[in-house]
Amino acid sequence: MSDVIDVHTHFLPESMIRTLRAGQTWHGWRTDRGPNGTERIASDGGIAPFPLDMADEEWPDRIRSRRDAGIDVQAIMLPTFLWSYHLPGLEAAAFCRDVNTETADLRDRYPDAIVPMGVLPLQNADRAIAEVEFAVRELGIRTFSVGTHVQGRNLDDPDVVRVLEAVFEAGAGVMVHASYFNRAGEDRMQRYDFGNSIGVPLEAGLSMMSIIYSGILDRYPDARIGSCHGGGWASFGVGRLWLRYTQGRDGGHLTASPAEYLGKLFYDCLLHDELSLGLLIQRVGASQVMIGTDHPYKGDIPGGAVRWIENMASLDDHQKSAILMGNAARFLGRAT
Image 1 (tube, helix red, strand yellow):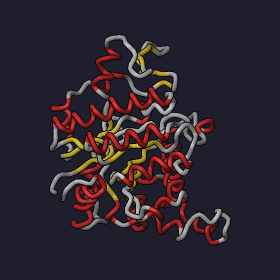
Image 2 (cartoon, helix red, strand yellow):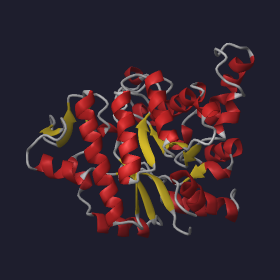
Image 3 (cartoon, one colour):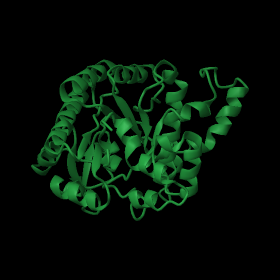
Image 4 (cartoon, one colour):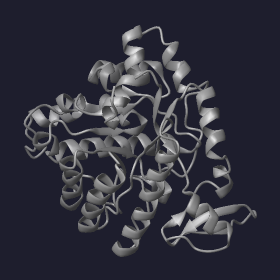
């Protein structure tokens, strides 16, 4: 495998774009105009932060432009504001089926450039498990994108854990991305874009530790679990979790120190700071870090994540190759 793989990119379904531009509603989503007249994507679950025209790039053009940026393969997921965990179970299942079918079709159209990440109706465990079975068996999807919470329920919620177990039983993995709506502490992050710069890593770290404390890694030690945004604060704050672990104040859910579990997970490189990435690599190993760019939502490393890794003097050639290519191939279940 010599292709550089980006595990953190987003797309809008073509069926959604066509339907909304025709003035119709798509699984509860619609377009409206904000106070300043700008177009917005909205639903009963909230208003999206980006306009529909951010998806105007055609796929052949996008593939070429990403290759110009050093990215050969894009693992694509919905943007987090579209996961639609607010929908009723039946409508959520229909939404996920449409998205997963279209994502798999994109892979079939561009097999050398696209890897699909499925979406699941996590608000309804039974329907989510049925979608896991369909998407893996019928569509060949091997990785699912999930939010950091499901309408306020962390990822150690018993119903969410049931779905994750079904994913791992099916031989698939999950990529966790910070939810856009209802982030932890958002009422105190209204200024300075703290909702993004602080709220996103807060969500990422909380989700990773929720998965760890659920005990699922003891039952599925080979589970493929990844975190966007480098796992957030988890690698930096794990010492405090270790303290409560040694004091027996964490409820006794773990069979090993919290830090030992971090090395079982995968992370994208989007920490935007070489010292921070260096600490993550010391914690978990270069074998667990992958390229992520957040394309097209402007969360990439300035100058591009690929160039950042290639020029990083603290990494040797073997580590760079692993981060650029090999680790993502393992995580996504692709042949190496």
